[in-house]
Length: 407
Ligand code: EPZ
Image (cartoon, rainbow, N blue to C red; front, side, top):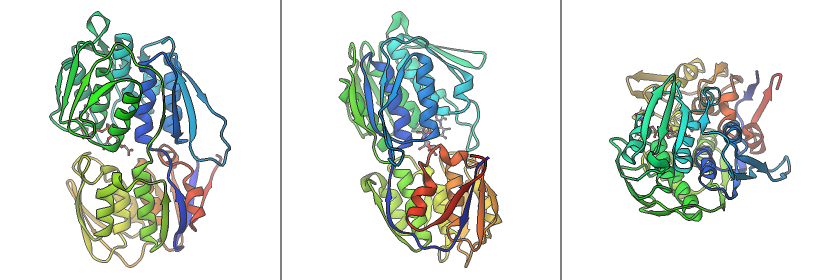
């Protein structure tokens, strides 16, 4: 298995291109299921999760065509055509590798009147149930059956009536599924306490470009008027605010100066504010609060801050797997329940460490950039799920980093 070796101490300087957003791409791709016409996505990041989603769509009968891109290019253009669906089932084998597969549930019910999706199962950062996804579809008139590890959703008469969805807590994925189900419903749907993440706005903008009727975009109350059919569209995936925030932490910890080419500051206000205040008391929260997907990277940066910081993880119940690994590098972090106290230390020391999930693995890379000696990060497949050509981007701004292994 691949490992990444980092020799710390270099100050990062220069330009670093930001790729299209993983968490937007994974909700834009299933929109292809909503029309027979072609949907083209530009600035699609080259990531393992995007490839897996392409395979899932293929097995539902969607063709996916990648326009010729030079190997040196970041991102690519993909045209998807769901002229005729050959299946409405997302099998366990694919779903267990990528929980975002659940995002075919809403569009399949909307387009085909039924969907069968394997339950995603547990995840290293938390239980992550899908009850809110199912309740939203029920509120729109679907019948839900659970059997043998699969959920089956059926629209009476082949088309959802629509309804009122009121989420008790904010869920990005459940909002996305509800939106994609509502756009082809017979009647109207109101979604209350909807997630307001920039990725949700990106999804709404693609659906609007396909002919959907949505109001309240970017707010916690979305109103959708179902339409008979949607048409094709070409859309550019938004820049990845979490990738940009991760590299901002990398630059900051080395005392460097890096231009994040293509990043959109408006989508990163909480992260930027926290960077300015480093040496902070922070709680993760749904957008526009501080993103949980930045918590681990920030913690790594704070390991070298002058003074103590307090982080509270409010979204996922098990998102401190990186703490013992950072401690192996000499970090001083005390965790009690959902709160971590990080005391800055004079120096970190390189060590063999293990990636446990996507963002945790990035925190180890960030720590390795300033650690004395060499850090060896194993299980880097976690990184490949969400960071496009990380070593190339970091070495281009001065990091001493390489990937080794049997490729
Ligand atoms: C999305 O996950 C992102 N993934 C996550 O990014 C991100 O951490 C998360 O939103 C929060 O911002 C993608 O977009 C593919 P949620 P999602 O539904 O949709 C609970 C990364 O690192 N909940 O907003 O799964 C849930 O357990 C990944 O890129 C229910 O209880 O997150 C959690 O505590 C990791 N029932 C909270 O809500 C449900 O039905 C928020 O989860 C759904 C969620």
